Length: 204
Ligand code: URA
Image 1 (cartoon, rainbow, N blue to C red):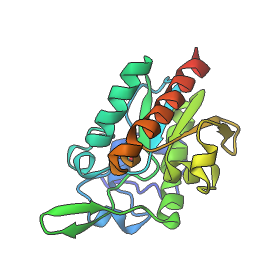
Image 2 (cartoon, rainbow, N blue to C red):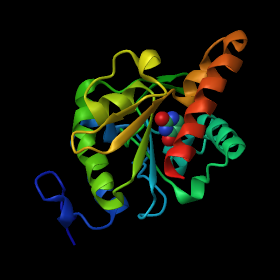
Image 3 (cartoon, helix red, strand yellow):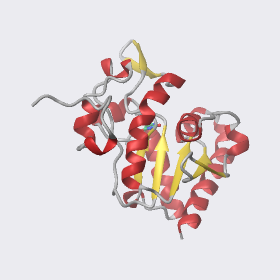
Image 4 (cartoon, helix red, strand yellow):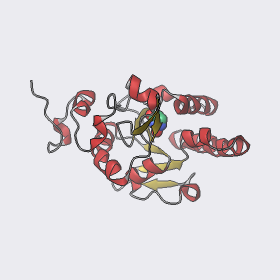
């Protein structure tokens, strides 16, 4: 059967997310990626976690947040009693964007056009899950969910809203914590931990 490309259809026509994403040609990122990475988790999750885009490991495995950033997220989540298995974990952009550097593939941030095109998929996931709270990790998620990526540091720890009124808790991206100098990491990680704690409290 011919795969129906979900470029003009209504979200209710999409069916299986993984299969539909495999046919996505909304932007060129599908061309170099191994596969799209759909969100995962229960469709009745109260919390949705949104990252930026799959990294190298996620691109190979087809699952979100299974690489180093995911491991850091998991360890902080465990500390604050946030059960990842009960949350829906996804990304603002579903394909890995990178530049080859020797044998390695270096992450490249998605641009606003790519974020906008891929928001169709995030909106679809949001309409299926209908989370009570969304945790936006980093500027890309924040741009996709609120239309404005500026001033992340001043906005983190705050709760904003999507266009349709869903609360969005703003926090840092775990990859950022892995990137900054070791001397700054403990303080930044404490902020990230406080935000995750707030998410747990909001859902209590
Ligand atoms: N970074 C992200 O934003 N998402 C992933 O799935 C992995 C790393």
